Length: 129
Image (tube, rainbow, N blue to C red):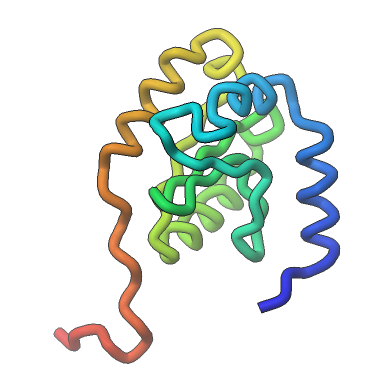
């Protein structure tokens, strides 16, 4: 499956210009430094770009800025989609990351200890009840 070139370009731009909170969290997560897990940033899980992802652990970490308060329905649809692929999604606000990074990392560590969500059944394989 080829990725949308515009989505790839946008992800590259976002990686080149992280918010202060994204930069701070990335310093803790990058290069397998945290819990020996590989995280990527501004990762495409089409049709979305997620802030941080550990694909092996099926964990997505989102940092919500001030503008996210008006995006509740969008975020809910996005989370539902990611969960349908077996990902768990955890969210933090910018102030959490900037003023309580140890607490944020503690929550991420706990999430990494929980097994990933089960992969969805292929279409037509569910039980009829």
